[in-house]
Image 1: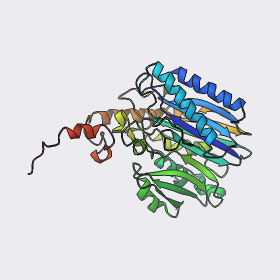
Image 2: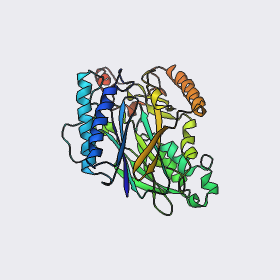
Image 3: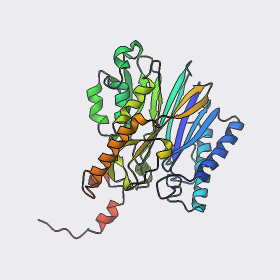
Image 4: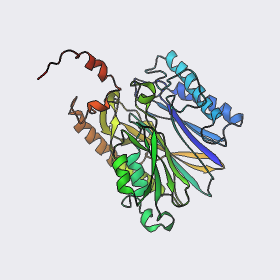
Length: 363
């Protein structure tokens, strides 16, 4: 059994919240090479999306392993020190504690992990987003694993005809529910159509139960009790065979869906698919970006990556994202560009509202 872990954190932006300083990636690379040399990791890849440091690892330690999580915690803390020396913006933003508790879950970093038996051919796609929140994968995952207009394999591939099951998390009440698609699609859409509260955690093949996709669903504000930045979630998707083909997995991103995040985490904006090189959200700290690193696994080795959105066939999606961004920006501080007030209770908005206390009088 091999475990694929993707753990990310914002440890310091360069310049502002737009990108990542190469010294941070070099620091992470050194830690990872040492861990691989000691046998803790089978393989690894260090990359970024915007100002988020992304650690992709294969190992045989299982999900939630303390040694793996401690490795990433140490990397993020050390990179935070480097960021502070360089006076990078928001150094250690996602590190909500100095004390490691055995896991990075609930401590600030985003985590997606899956354990599985490697197939004869094992293509995996790692999606990473910046300037958006947990729940941003709801629509793509629905399209990939439940929409025959996106994934023709659901119709014509016998090994996918039974559908997939979706584990949905209520991130406010900390509970979960599992839906079977296609039978319970309508019930599921009631929940996942509200990504600010409900997020698809994982998807499994039916009837085998084999893991197909896993996302990070932690909400930073719920851990910190205040706004410390958007969640910038990650997603792992296995492809081909009994799972959707690579092209079917990528297809949802040809439509730049509207997501929460962007400037100060307080706005709606289009999720723009782009190459890793172009994942530098600059206009109004955006618009939100998504990148995809593709790998073939071979004995746990990460063969790749291929930068999957570095492709002119996504130019139109980028064009549409820019048009949508332009339209929304013209709304300035007005909804629906700005998030509704009830969704801004953990941003800096309450500090402004307190200034108005006592100013209201009865009608």
